[in-house]
Length: 449
Ligand SMILES: [Zn+2]
Image (cartoon, rainbow, N blue to C red; front, side, top):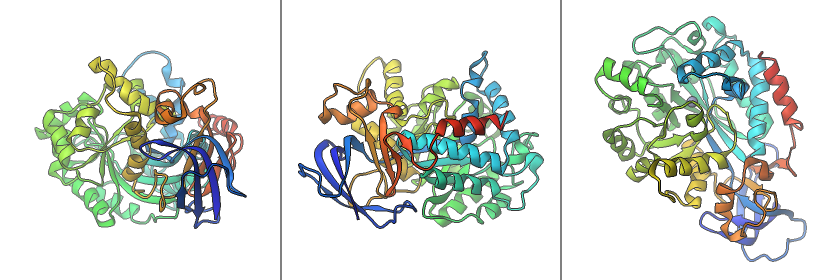
């Protein structure tokens, strides 16, 4: 057993000083360690305890990631354009990925995530095959590269293996998209069924979008996920052009189409959920379908601001993702969701800081099929994320306002220590396994140029 003594701990509703947390069940390497006790009123560290100064939070969950988009950071900020012109640049990087280069990039990106307090990632993975659509000898070589990358970066992964079989409503995949396609969702299901859960990895499903999976093939993906009790994610109404094309092809909104084919439900998360009708919001909330907001990407790609307040009020649990990785910082995602709403409504305080942290932690983990993570309580996976309270950003904050400090003052750079499933991943700001994460990123990105 390992004992941690936390100077201040956020316990979901409030900050408690002087907390001891016992962790057991892991040899410290496989990330399955769990919290066995949380003891308050422990004024001095017990003998042998690891002391964590500052504010300790549960692990953060990055519920929506495309690891390879990290290679685009800054380089896509030259000139003007739209989501669709950005997509052409993104496809150029996708064309150059191999299992080896993708492993190296994803390991570095997941290490970057770990440095900011992220202990689980939902990887929305659709670059399945070699360029042109040729199968690798292991048809899941790319997915396996991502699972290995997460293990070596010390975080958990939910591989949201993504069905992507058409270019638009009734259109064949274009030349870039051949790598993404299994031909049909039946072909997708056969390949995805070869993937297996590991202690640090769960296999989930995704429908890329209503553009990429024909309506009559949606049920195959939904049934595959239902049989396994697996999470099912889908990009939903990120762009108005998708809504228009869906109306033209099917005479309904993308949300209605997904509802009609059994895709919505409590294991399902709609990613973005930006351009919705009132009826869409009712369908999503009424079916307990989750919403993953990706505010830094949505602003970067000029998507618009989704109706997160109304969705949550209607019954949709919220999670957060860094998606294109223009920024990797869940504190910024949480802050941006609230601040976007302030800009739109010209009123403040749509969520409490505690509610925003919950979206970034427990609710994000639940959306990825880890309902036993994201809280500091007995039985939970032992994720501890410690923020310094004396950086230039956080200095002067009152510890009892820890949630407010984390969301509205701190950034990922204030994370000093990360334990994921009992394994120490970040110590004193350094990634224990990867070491120089910046160099790992530089090399991995250079290999794709
Ligand atoms: Zn996405």
